[in-house]
Amino acid sequence: GQSLEQPSEVTAVEGAIVQINCTYQTSGFYGLSWYQQHDGGAPTFLSYNALDGLEETGRFSSFLSRSDSYGYLLLQELQMKDSASYFCAVGGQNFVFGPGTRLSVLP
Amino acid sequence: DTGVSQDPRHKITKRGQNVTFRCDPISEHNRLYWYRQTLGQGPEFLTYFQNEAQLEKSRLLSDRFSAERPKGSFSTLEIQRTEQGDSAMYLCASSLARTYEQYFGPGTRLTVT
Image 1 (cartoon, rainbow over the protein chains, first blue to last red):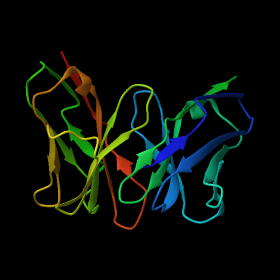
Image 2 (cartoon, rainbow over the protein chains, first blue to last red; image 1 turned 180 degrees about the vertical axis):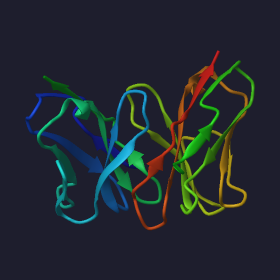
Image 3 (cartoon, each protein chain N blue to C red; image 1 turned 120 degrees about the vertical axis):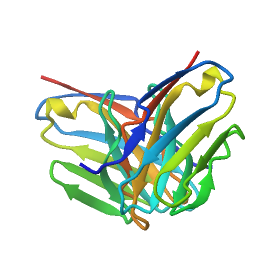
């Protein structure tokens, strides 16, 4: 089976840096994805890591350690619009999403 | 904008009725996924297609659920004999093969009364 764990909630202030962790247990691991979902909206793709290391895309970065079955999403220079739920997901023949981390950005 | 579209956006039905949802993926995408999401949870994988072939179906999916993608373009998801536990947002996503970047539609919110 496949399972993922994420913190349920994270709170930070505008301009800060926040890290959202994800640990996974899976067979046939292909890579770790991250998605953002605003309330009432659909998930939108943020990043994908197939190999160990850090991937940077603007203010967002994602890290993967396959040996530790662990990854994280790093959000820098937080803005109010970053308040949303963030999901990690493992890919393979199908996709398994984590339970999500609700990020609240305070002024 | 030629993103993923879903129809209807909302559906209210009585327990025991059948419902069918439609998804139109991004035209050049050959993979199509169906998910179910309840409040406060992550999307739960239901099934996926590559072109017209249904390659994977969640073992959590009961026999009341069936999906088709007859010509490798749009897809339908049917739920027979709906139950109150089927109330959820049903999300469709599409992607190119060999990539993991999925584009999600706006979803169909099902309420079973």
